[in-house]
Length: 314
Image (cartoon, rainbow, N blue to C red; front, side, top):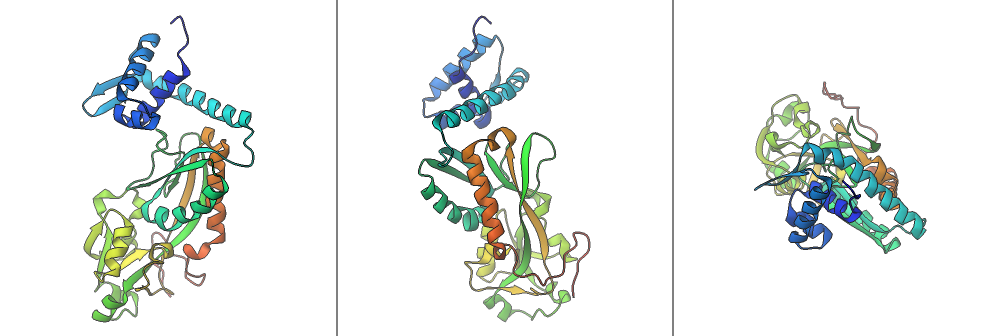
């Protein structure tokens, strides 16, 4: 190799590594897909190696491509940091932040809080990824992820966002048509709405195993938003946090003062991206908002702490 690769070619390399397709990369970079292919071919010729395996399914990094990836990411991070520093961005953040969040949390909590932030920072843009799984930060699918399982390896900033409790809810119509629920044993005679068990994005979503019995699932959905809609229509009981049901006024808590499950959301961002002003602005907003709005996550402080291995009741 007689010359260094151009940074613009490495940008194409990074985006293709993340999206896996020419069409996805062309959309992200606002160019034709033929331009993407030409840039990748040029980079491979310049480096004298094959960076991607091509197939009908898309582009997969080769061993040499995987070796190049962290160096290209470091160059990207340095370029972004230099741009911010030279632009003197200290008060107003600018640029794009991609934020991955669970569907109903992102819809009911995150999206509304972002409105004021975007008004405050007119040059800031946010892509809110409401995925049926948790965002893949390793391939830079998102800059920040809200997840139940923080990574145990890799260079990430990790902080607890909120501990939330899940309560049993049922619609007023459902509860009026079915036997009353006065104690834990009564729950076993009722029907439930839950997650599709073989499509769980995390084992932490397996809430109902903590009931102490196998629930009678009438409907299973891959997202909690659909679960709450079905429960609100009277199909069965649902286990959900307060923020998930706040717009369903006909859903009422069941055994609220005697039973709950508990989980935690974690904020995660690659260390190099966390250094960027625009990423920290979004990160800080999420943490501050969660601290100020604890009723979204817990109905009150009177509940007995719930054990992950043993059910607790008064």
